[in-house]
Image (tube, rainbow, N blue to C red; front, side, top):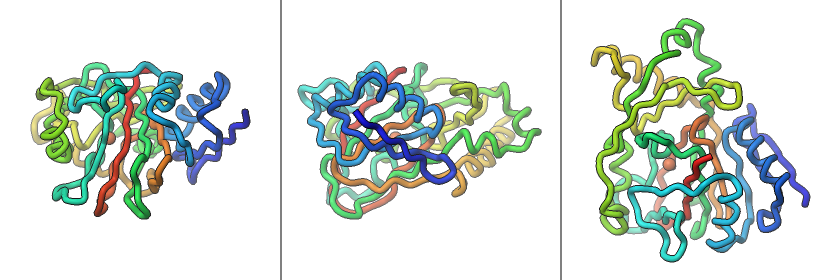
Length: 265
Ligand SMILES: [Fe+2]
């Protein structure tokens, strides 16, 4: 099977041209390698039914439960991420974050597939945290090297879940709080691991120091120069590495429905 990997500008994200229905072990290895190098990968025109989509995801990692929403009926591990035409608030996931960073064991990869997408119905913005870490000055790198962040499911991004939780909530959701080092290493390269939608404080700093440092780092890690945007179409699949990429949905009007899978790897 042929597989062609085309990195985007500044090596932030890559397009992979292949047919995921017939992806083999070497294609999966190349996909993982591309995730390590570029943070996220996208595949266009993949006409996979939910069963085949799950099969593909399982080649990349272990399906992880999402605590907030019920699964698609009959397909354990697929969460329906939907915006309805009549929805008033922000789109689901609108605002910079990295998925489920409030869990003790955070999901490594997220897969998102466009199922109902009309023309010009929004994008996902991705910001490389390899690039953002690299661009920090040496003094800041040393200052943050051993710092630990406090991550909460009740952070600012939680407001974008309200409508879907009312309809499809698991009833098991609570306010999850977790702590993680804010500098991670992914394949020998350091990344900044912060989620503006979830990170509420830096441990062992005064309130003021924590607030100021977070404000500086959130602003830094979301700069345009670290970003690539992806425009959604039906049957597009994007996979990202939550340890090296942060992302944000963009606003749009109308209905859009996606299938999401989170993975441990
Ligand atoms: Fe997300």
